Amino acid sequence: MLFRLCLPRRRGSVRLAIALLPAVAACGHAAGLQDSPHFIGPLATPAPPLPKGAFNIEPYLVSGQSGARFDGDGHRRGSRAPVQWTTSIPIQYGVTDRVSIGGTLRGQYNRLAGGSRGFARGDTSVAASFGLLDRDVPNRTRLALTVRQRLPTGRHDRLERHEVPGSGTGAASTTLVLHGQAYLLAGLLRARASIDWTVPGARARLHGRSTYGTASGFSGRIQLGHGAGATASAEYSVDPRWTLVGEVVYEQDGGSTLRGHDRRGNAERRQLPSSWRLSLLPAVQYHVSDRVGLIAGVQVGVAGRNAAALVAPQVALNVGF
Image 1 (tube, one colour):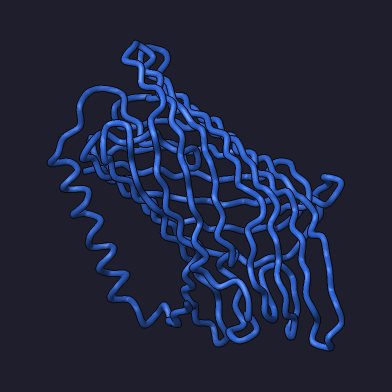
Image 2 (tube, helix red, strand yellow):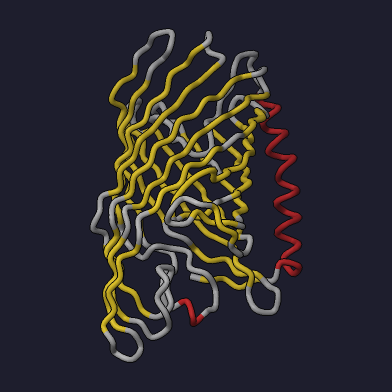
């Protein structure tokens, strides 16, 4: 789905968003801030299940640019890619003290012909988290398992019709995530870590130009390989309002198999190469209240193979109820 808009003509919406920020801040200050360490979570590492009845929403705005790529040998090579703005809205609700459900809505802004911008809906995901370990000890150790299902709601093929980049994968995939957290240094430091595995074999039909590099007139399908990743993060509370965050993210794609026919009817079969990337994500949190906080940081790809050397500044507003 693609919504066309011209940003200068939507100043009313921008003014409304700006007007709401002081209201959010005022509500946050009214709720007060306890004189104790505060954490809202890092940018990428998942959180354990929420307490029963708790609700959390955290809209993200990300500006991504890939001025370089890591080639098949891991060397950094210059490349030209436009700046792309993406949004995601993770939502989580605590069903019980050990079970949470949630989902993530995604979208991206693209520059269109004539200088306007278009908003394209991205893939959606739904998830359920199950608490495996919750120890009420000084370190407050928690361990959880999350099952995440990606739904192909974004645009992945027939891109020549709209002359915009793709915004989805076209494939429904399942990911398992094992993650945990613990408190250290008398509660001033919170550490989180996770590992994830995406089940291989998800398929997508392809027609025309697609996010997988097919050209106009192509007709076929792609079978995705496995995906894997790991994260580790640390949040250190400087004072009740400010928290410093450091995070390491590893992403791996096992490669995919593409089959079909080009516009002339010739058979085409390609094995898309596997890829991996290691990124650092320094960030800082500001806590408006016990329930409202801001986090801003940047993801920087420092090593990889067949992957973008990503530089992605991002900001998120975390609100709990």
